[in-house]
Amino acid sequence: MKTALTIFITLIISFFSCSDDNPEIDQPIILNDQAIIIDHKSTDLNKIPESAIKTAKDQLHIAYGHTSHGSQIITGMSKLDAFMGGTGLYKWNDGPKQGALDVDNNFVSGDLGHNGSTTWAKDTRTYLNKTENVDVNVVIWSWCGGVSDNTPNGIQTYLNEMNSLETEYPNVKFVYMTGHLDGSGLNGKLHKNNEQIRDYCKNNNKILFDFADIETYNPDSTYFGDKIPNDNNDYDTNNNGKRDGNWAVEWQNSHAQDSDWYDCSCAHSKALNCNQKAYAAWWLWASLAGWDSN
Image (cartoon, rainbow, N blue to C red; front, top):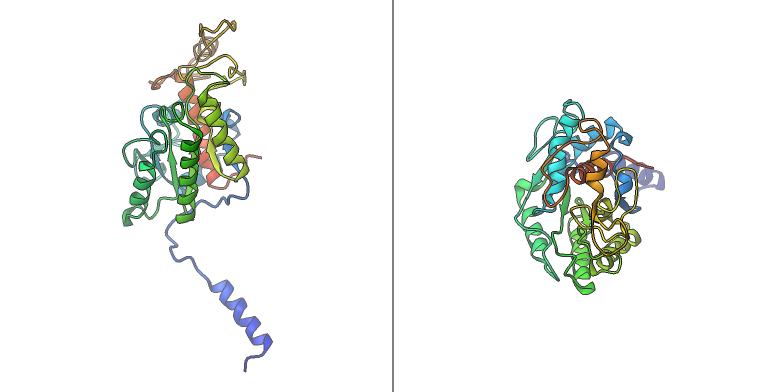
């Protein structure tokens, strides 16, 4: 019969000799013990340590599903490295490549769809179950107009599907997203649906890329949410119910290009908006790779 000391020693040896079943697969080291909220406060690229950027490139293998509005993140990221001096630090590539962030851009066609759609979830499962995608450890989907015409039940269906995917694929980080602005204001359906997504993510320690919040503030943190802003960054300057200004154009005109912002062809919007989305995206990647922004 084994003595208590023998059993204890055996357990200790077993603990320290355990190894990962898939040692070659990089997984994000962040644990969801608190919510990760990426919004307009996550757009100061200079606050992200270079080491965190490099760790993200080493560890993350991202699958990103989107249509035109979601392309704003990719458009901004594609021009960012040149804007930052062309050192290669902010390089990304559609597939694994030395020195670049691995993003499977448009890993399947489509976006999060409309009221109650779950096609994207089915496509995600099919994709993740393929042997060649075993290294994927981040999945992010964007909306197009699917939050604007949605219902609380439809949004809950989206949240439930995301939660189910997290349970089924515990080694993958799933990033939630809000819908882009549509000019309907704080009393509109879009804002209420976005608030449902935000509350769920904050209350359940989820990862959220708050697409709409980034569109609601300029780089100086000036708030435009109460001025019926839309996805083109148009807003109502004098509260008469008509959008007659554009915060992105105004900010760009008052700041030197190639110093404070960079030009890019931003779908449905202005270059500055894609700039901000790119900065926030790298904040997200760094956070998923273990950087604590606090």
